[in-house]
Length: 170
Ligand SMILES: [Zn+2]
Ligand SMILES: [Zn+2]
Ligand SMILES: [Zn+2]
Image (cartoon, rainbow, N blue to C red; front, side, top):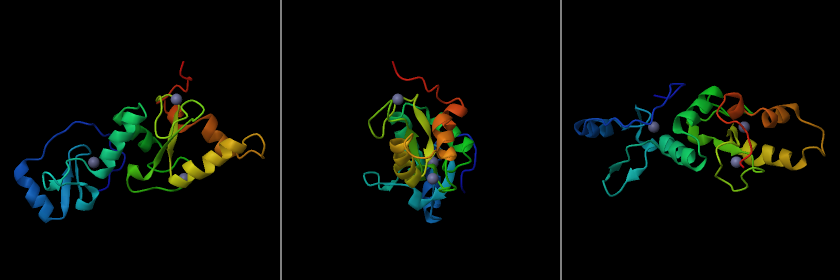
């Protein structure tokens, strides 16, 4: 049921429509992006069509984020897999990728929630992203160094796995 490490392709393959009521009756639905049955509550309801949407919440979230951060959907999934499907800093491992935030270097792209794509650092849980990393970046150099955080900032997962070149935007 749960996605583990398989490469996602944003190809849409429709389930034959006649199967959908049968899926709903079993409390599941088919995501056309990650190509698997998931519990119905993983889908946002499309009220116009009076049926669940064809993409699960996680894939919808991934696609939106990939667009905003100028990273391909496949690369975002690669990053998630490369990090062992967990936060790059702590053991937090949400069941789905939409439980993690995409962290980028605000010195390069100051706006929240968007990036040029080259300053993406990694996927972090909410508290590491909004709390630990933000705090450390502000005080870095004025407090004793934290090797774990220095390693993350100096050699972030996205760069290590070749997803970004970390070249500042010109
Ligand atoms: Zn999906
Ligand atoms: Zn974390
Ligand atoms: Zn940037």
